[in-house]
Image 1 (tube, chains in turn purple, cyan):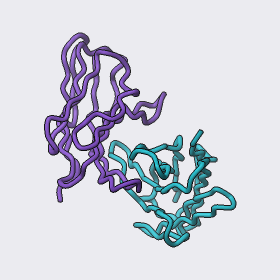
Image 2 (tube, rainbow over the protein chains, first blue to last red):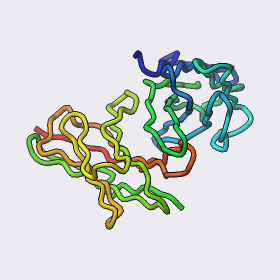
Image 3 (tube, rainbow over the protein chains, first blue to last red):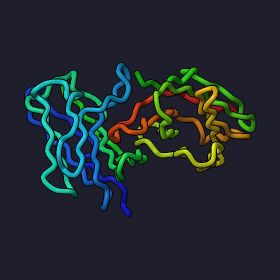
Image 4 (tube, chains in turn red, yellow):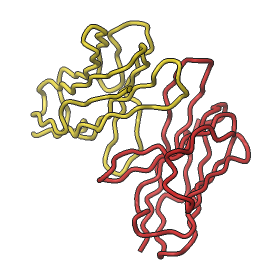
Length: 116
Length: 114
């Protein structure tokens, strides 16, 4: 298996532009997570999908951020308009949730976003 | 409230000496516990996991961790450090009964000196 795939790996954009980050989870996994990592705040969970349905989006910073999962093999995280404080590494992770048992998450390589 | 505490933000060891990274968790339930490693400019990689089977868990690259319920600890150890072990390590909990939402410790940065 190729693991979790994220694109692009690096993105440099100017303030005010729309940014779209993409994620392909591991085949067969039914849960998908978007995280943001910065030096100041560490790893933050932004949103969590289970069976393509958003379950918890309490970590989404503000309305400029939106996430979709149109099918089991694809998710996007969009920032519109982007701001310099959005600069961070964004990780996508996937896992297989079975009943009440927690399972490990598998992380993608991340997208390093720089907003000028 | 459920939480994960990594007791050291930085640990420095010499190559060939033992590694000990400490982690305590706070949970109303018996959680699943994990250690992840993150090398510079890389994603997080699972080192090992505890899911209520054997309390001593062996992972990749010679790492192991012991779950001690009485101490609510899940410390990570390795008998002999290698230069390639230099990275950031995260202790992570998945509380039983909750959604698949992970609780991350703040991380411990391991430096390995020649």
